[in-house]
Image 1: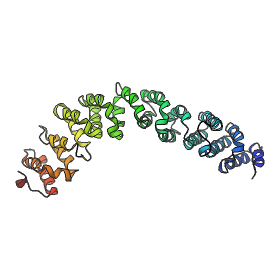
Image 2: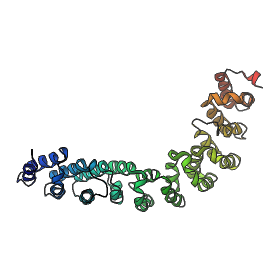
Image 3: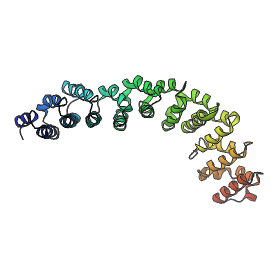
Image 4: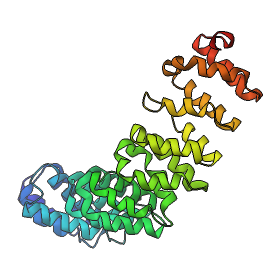
Length: 321
């Protein structure tokens, strides 16, 4: 169908005709009708608005740079559609912006994280932008501080902002949002190292935040060695256990944490140290002697765990001693 025919159908009296035309413009990449398609995003009929939003996303996904005026105008039209009263229109506008990978829409997408119908796709769109969503960092911080709907999604996006997002995460570590932020940090792994002083301070505290901070130390790995040693020496029992449990598995740079904990005064910590070593048998084999000492532990569960680990390593308690 030629552009003139599609243009006529975009203004037809029958909404179904307008829907079909808006869909066809996008699928056939009829760039000459971009202006008409943008106008259709404000059509009185929600089905037409939805189809036009989809069409704009398809039309501009692979045609035109972000700074192209046509693309900028398409983004502006879709951003307006994010506030549409009809859920299907909001969802499709969000999906279209995701398809277009439009950094200019980052701030406008943040409120959608608090929209139950759009939150998942809005999060995906922002995560896909990665560091290009950095202009939305302030808005994301506000969502986390509100601690309501969308806070976890906002943290997931902040993780993807790269080094630029770390100052925001650092600010959020101080105050009532700290536990939620600590829970979100492990996927960053060593990239969370700039936050180590705050994480280490939390790990030497108490309660849920301290245990979550221990998990972050394990995720950071080698760089967190000094902080991990401090936790193993002075941290609460539950926090020491949490640190060892988070070594899943321990690596060559962190296996020493588990070996050190084999001689902890608390049986629960010693047992967790053995469990950590069992998850890295190749590394644990180098510490059969230390493990063998626990085969005679006064706590039956610790002794049994040590004997089982030695058996799995092909060692016997009497030889290990």
